[in-house]
Figure: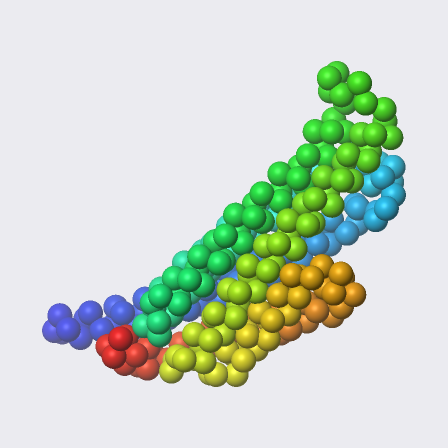
Length: 240
């Protein structure tokens, strides 16, 4: 077997593995994100500081599970970002890099929000230096930190909105993925951008998340089942 043929086969195998890996890590994002939302929704009682504080103290393992799921979700997002950057470089290197930048900034803001999520455990931990506060004040602080974390998540969703828009455009310009996936990803990006106006996003919630689930979910399924058209990817890479 010649070196050229061997190199081509290795490239094909690498591309298929990258596409499948992106699909697998996207599935992990959905699973861990869903778990974090489910656990968080069970523990936080909107507007009720005492009930929220009692839930957190009574179910600390679940609260830490919520935190761990969020960390894994962000780590998986970083991996998908790196895989997508490499996958879409032949379409437009600069736009692929810009998309990766938006995603990584979103991940950084998301990671910052987890500090706010952990703060209630510190505030409600019963340390001696916290005795200067009344119980009601500590409970209010705990809920305030959770709300600040939620605001940070809203900000990171805006960055992910730009990311999905750019990925959608790159798919539309590509020849190795169906264009309908690009359209769906673009709609997902537009839906996330509604978080630029939090009252609008809150009014449309939870329906505003449907385009994201549809767009990202469709892309995930395609990558897992079909992967990419390796021949067209190579042709576009050669043209680039």
